[in-house]
Length: 113
Length: 114
Image (cartoon, rainbow over the protein chains, first blue to last red):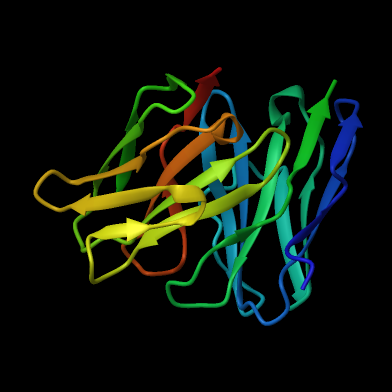
């Protein structure tokens, strides 16, 4: 398996624009997590899905953020409209359940100017 | 609520010296604990994990960590640092609901000097 695949790796956008980040989890994994990494706040969980169903979105900072998982092999994180303070590295991770290892993607570095 | 504290945001060692990265956690239930490493512009890679059983856990690249319940600690060590160990290291604790969510410490950047 190629691991967790995120796209794009880098995104530069202007304030106010819509941004969509994509994630393909490892096949067979049933839980997917979106994390955000910033210098100020470190790594924080935004939302996670279990069997494609959003379970906890309490970490989503504002209504401008939304996430979907239409099927077991794809998830998106959308920011609309984007703001400079959204600049961060966004990671997607998946696990196969229980207390197995969480596998992380390479991340998407988002810069909002 | 769980939390993780990593003592020292930057640690510098000489090549060949002992590496010690400190991690203390807070959890109201028996914790599952993890150490991840992040190389520049890369994702996080699992170094090792403690779930149950033996409290001394061995991981990849010669790293190990010891779970000490009485001290609520899970410090990461390596007997001899290598230049390739330079990276950022994150300690994490599982959430109390056993959902797979991880609560991360702030990270420690390890510098290895020649």
